[in-house]
Length: 276
Image (tube, rainbow, N blue to C red; front, side, top):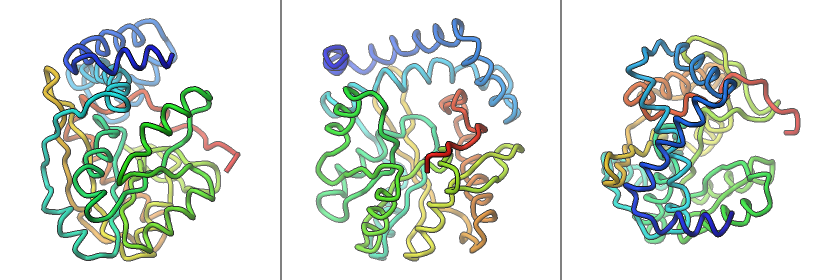
């Protein structure tokens, strides 16, 4: 598999996305469980087929582009809202970036690290280590780059993020990722209760950090990516459930700006794992 990753990493982005789009439809048509979860989640959000159909190919593109992003040459990145990041860093109280499973969430952290991570403040991103040993090694090497480090979804990872924020550094989290049991609350997401992490709000309040919403738009024909940033339009409440509801609402609005690139097959409404 490492050899396959290296081969895919040298292909042009337009070809990678073309192959990934086809693979996305192949999985959608061949897996009843995957297809049903995809459709259930899309319908829960009130989408018609014209809105959700492009997301089938987008899911395949998201997987296919990872070798290029992890091991290949840099991809073109265009910035939308960089002035918000500049202003947040000037506050020197840390920045918490919240990114849903929308577009290419891998490229948002890479773009930040390249532009700010080495000259201003580095970023630490929260991630769940892959179960397969060979993939853990690849991911660890790919994500551990200058200006960017990773923190696992464990108590040690949480402590690492708290320490980084106290130093005025930046954090990246996917708040629509289902946390382990005991690390979240039930809050509505597109009208249905979903187990939602409380960590992002706790970190931001504790350090009085700036909260920014971010996502990486996948541009057509392999032209690269556009990273978008916007502010959270309200202060986070001290109550954990209210804050989680606020964040879910913000993620909903972000997703609906481009539902064609959201990962609708993600098991957003599953029960949390017990191994916190």
